[in-house]
Image 1 (cartoon, rainbow, N blue to C red):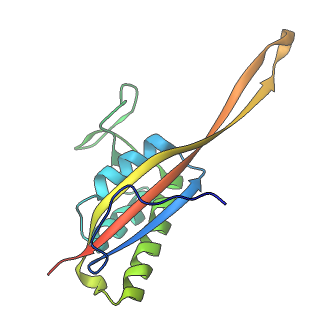
Image 2 (cartoon, rainbow, N blue to C red):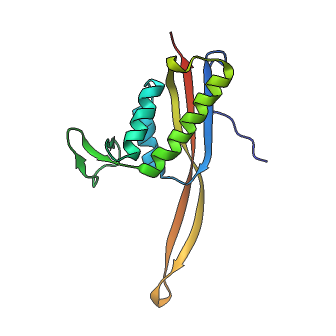
Image 3 (cartoon, helix red, strand yellow):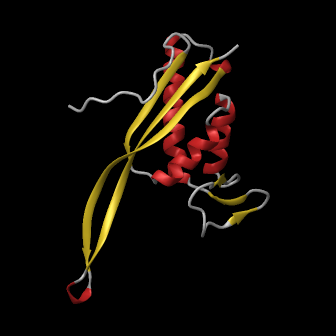
Length: 150
């Protein structure tokens, strides 16, 4: 059984944490989503993720965005629906943990949002003339911390 913890220590009386381990989503898209929701209120973060899932609001890409198409009014951005669904699920788990602790869910802020690279599945697809193409699938670990503010 693997042992893992969180990458940050928060006050357990005012905060609630949740993590998603070994998610089959893009690391790059997950990092960009978490950069947007970090520092927002819980309701704002959930509504942003729902808008991304409905393809009505793009996620701005700040790093590695050379060939990313530009969106109106913001520059390079995409709609990473699969990663947004995974992050929304972890965010809802953090909200449930906060509710279980007795925190007021209407006063929660996202204070910690981090993505870490997980394991890679290495496989190869055989091609013509004795060649092979690598198919590397990546896993991502997501951590979200919520804090109750007055």
